[in-house]
Image 1: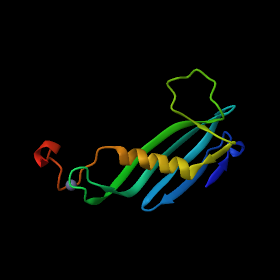
Image 2: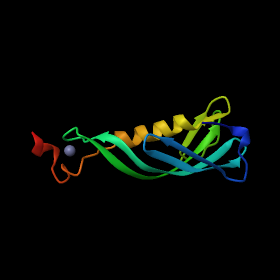
Image 3: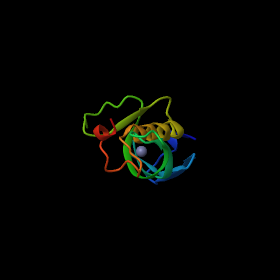
Length: 123
Ligand SMILES: [Zn+2]
């Protein structure tokens, strides 16, 4: 799913993407000039290996996602903003979704069987 940046306006543009068992939905709204805001949630679940026993578990998701999108290089000085710069004025929603999932997968995760055990106890 690709959304041209110029389609964004002051009315929220809703989106919904599915990837395996995960669902990414929310909206995009133009804030000013070449800056837009994405607000959404990731729900459903992902298959992820337990960091302790490596068993693949379906991890339920309920993640609030919020960041800004800049059409091209962002030249403001709002350094506290979480900004993703997009290329060619096209917002690649699949790529954004994929990177959010990667971020979730990179977090520490342990399955219900291993909860309460520490990594040290395993070795
Ligand atoms: Zn485990």
